[in-house]
Image 1: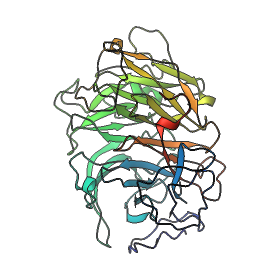
Image 2: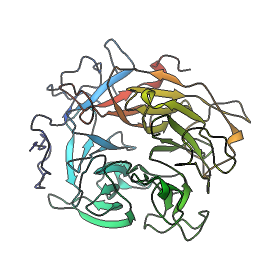
Image 3: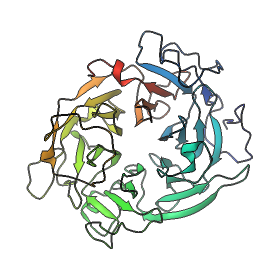
Image 4: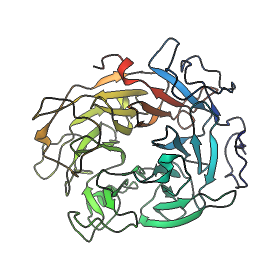
Length: 406
């Protein structure tokens, strides 16, 4: 059993069994290159120091030693929430300090790709001012996948409220990304739970993007007001974010041929299992980008401060940058401040994807944009990877320093 009692916290919460003893999340100096960081070094660097002074000046390691990290939430005060899939533990990371253990989410039953997956907090949460508050989590249980509202306890077990349950589970294809949109509603991605036909069943929650209130009620202007389903025909959506016009973008695992990035339209059918990648069928919406699965296996997705999509690739061990240009203005699409839940795909031009950091950090699970425009990335080498001694890591990226960025 791995100990998680870092220097700044000691919570009396039972840890889940089955994790290694030698991986303890540790803070790293954000002014040190990601390729030069000593995972055992404890530092007290200020969070706003310039990133990276080593061989790759666009990346800095901020924390190390996570065990299968998955959920990642940037907060306005400069800190982040990080969740571990198999231990069901949630940490707060303040750059320059060791991560602090907030809580372990009870009732999580990790199995294959399931466990504690996505995390989210509303825009008006006290977390953004550095004050502990409830957060939302997507979790696999013994019976299903569900969305939870979790209020961390002060040294005790957290208070947990079920927001949405009955999402089919399986060893693979559990979806799991959650995020509050610019309209204030909670968006939930689900997988087909290895039953492709369920993605086309409007009465099943599998293989969908869902849109609900913070209480789990279907958003009133959904395509079917009585249903949480926003879009269907998905195999396993893993990432989502909005650009400045409110367009919703999602990354999705393919099967054996093509992975996808999709522009989500309310009520849209994205074709799975009848179609993988672009099919040209009039009843289905084709992806705007597709890759061979060996080049991507796209997980997290974020709209960067430069208006491009950034897609974290697991099997492809890269960060893909996909330029977006507003077709009306000819300018970058920008970050998510709009209010729409899907717009005409003709309103945006999608450029040629650019592959960044290929093979440098192994498998990349999650990517998010921070309040100052920086990108945060979680590696995923302790699951199906070849972990280095300091894996898994939380990395900070400077988009302006990346090759090919404007």
